[in-house]
Image 1 (cartoon, rainbow, N blue to C red):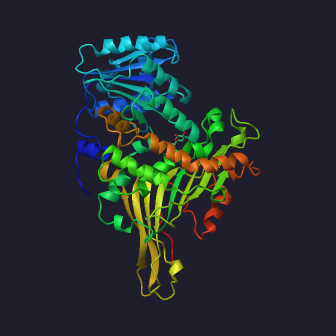
Image 2 (cartoon, rainbow, N blue to C red):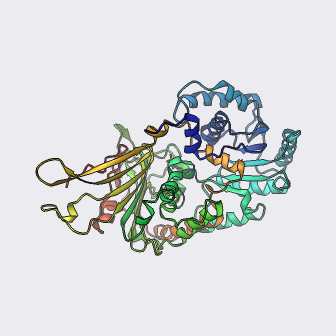
Image 3 (cartoon, rainbow, N blue to C red):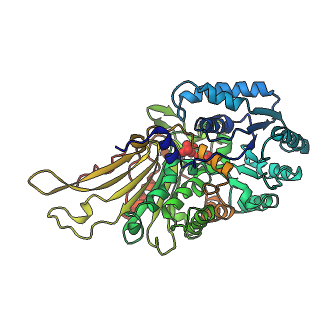
Length: 525
Ligand code: BG6
């Protein structure tokens, strides 16, 4: 095993450049919200520990509720104590030095996101914070419900807070969901591009904050062995799975309007699709990478409803625990037609991928939590081995395990030791934790850091968001026109509806089993 110092490993694995960002103030809209507690603050804390924030740094938190800076700081301190010990933390008590560095720079401001006063007051606060700072850079983080994205940006513009000058960049992070279909995404882009230029907008897709997702490009383009095989001549098909064991986690109201297709496909699953399917960019410059991703979205064949399966979970048992059906969840209609599962077959109309199906699936309350991409190579052309017909040779599958068991494996055929020639499937395996140790990361560190240094590679550009929505629009429309009659059609804790199996069986293919622990190669010939 390679030995590598922990710090260097953290930098290499996180892809953070060794430099520190210029002085800046972050304003968080939605300071009392869940995202701030669960992800933004822990990520900032991890950045302090990695020494990746500038000394001249401040945080202004804005929200509707009336609380003092002291109370805001105290509440977040309590949450952080739990976080430090849990997933994304180091497992130890909170690092007091790092946390107090951050807490001392946090200021709370009560404000209504729709009132101009709030923004006048914010302007004054920012000026106060930035007095004596070398630069008046400001990042506005919209950790708020999507209906506020447009209005907050308009108010920021109205108060003159988005104006940039030498030594004063102004950037805005916009969270998901960015629109709920093609028309709304296009309208939101048009609204915010009246105030901001594209290079000021950082649209988040948190899947791009995952190390394993960033590693896909390294795997493909920093290694000579994969790219020559990465095309229709050698690849039979690709499966992309994002299976979750959680249900809708109390978000019934949001989910009823959204469903699995909107929630996961044009954003998270398409990010995986783009990383695995895009053409090589001419550089790792933000626009070069994002241009290639957008091209891929444009090449997606319009999805027909014959190539799509929707599902909704009924009652069942997930990881040994009894679960109610989706229609019994709070804030969900008793006859809800919202899908909690979707499986799709996609075709990509370009030279590299013509004729290679991409099968995508995602769902709530499935049997295991696993996000992975499996690239299945074509079979060897003929069976040299007596008694092993070619269709029974185990397939070569390169599996990229995105989470939770992060790593990569290649399954191939080997001779089982013995006098007879018997062929068995075996695995070559790489696990991140073996090389780099556990990483203290919530997946937002790189995103926030990149925004502070002005690197937009991992953020979504307007044209990509619109192209992704456009690719699923025909299916959204078809589903809206055809009522479902068979919901619920899979039991919580299963691998999804039977129709999803039929989608692949039609093409004489099979989904790989959904499981957290990998063992794809263990299939006997
Ligand atoms: C969110 C979706 O964007 O991504 C959730 O709204 C989903 O429904 C989540 O559970 C999945 O993200 P992760 O990082 O937990 O795989």
